[in-house]
Length: 122
Image 1: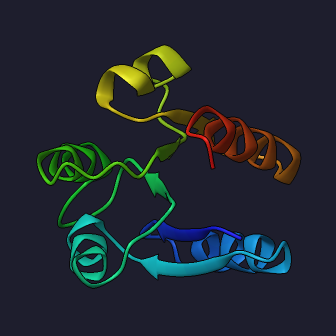
Image 2: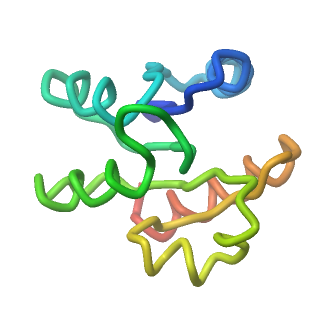
Image 3: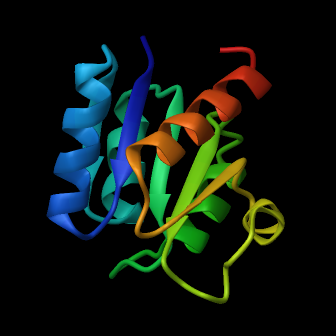
């Protein structure tokens, strides 16, 4: 079981991912932006962050930068429909350990999730 925080300003995406990963036995928390996620992460430790890139208040890039300042070792999967961030290589340069394009399939997000966890020995 993993403890996952899902960070996205779209409530429906957070809910769908929460249900999907919860049904697989994982614990999920939700945040609507990076600021809220950092507040939650001050009190709880997570095994994985799944975050969107475009959000109000604090976007995914700034959020990832803030995580690295806190020396958070939690791997990050970046979700985006942004054509500018259209590859895993660009996502890794931003600081994410994984990447999934929107719209995504459950097969693809599950595969990326498993790859990231195996790379981080979890």
